Amino acid sequence: MSLPHPAADQISLANVLAVLGDQTRLAIVGYLARNEGVAMSCGQFLEFGSKTNLSYHLAKLREAGITSTEMSGTSRLITLRRGDLDRRFPGLLDSIVTAARDIPQLERLREQS
Image 1: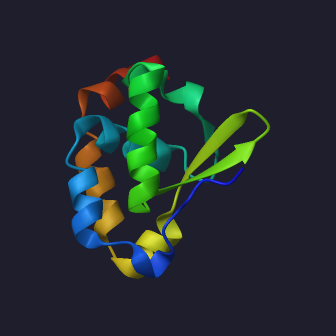
Image 2: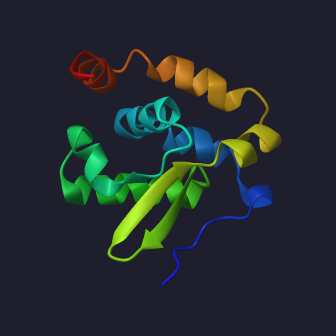
Image 3: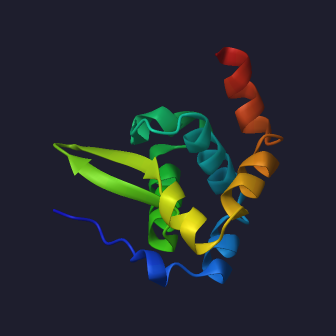
């Protein structure tokens, strides 16, 4: 089973910004950026909400083209689509990640590390 992702040229700035207008999704992107290059399982985001709530937020991020979700057995592995986003909107992701540093959920995660 494969999950739908928009092609890089279909990623819309308006949609990316709308999806990242939610603090939970912004925190997830910040967390992915801090752990860039490492595919994260859904369970690694439990700090950000319930499984049902996370499933919704992760789907929104994937549908907007911000993340990529790959199936691996019964797990879903999430990565940031930095390359596609940087090609489409140079500098945008870095600005977003910088802004995400001040989100309380990420502050708690930093303190636990």
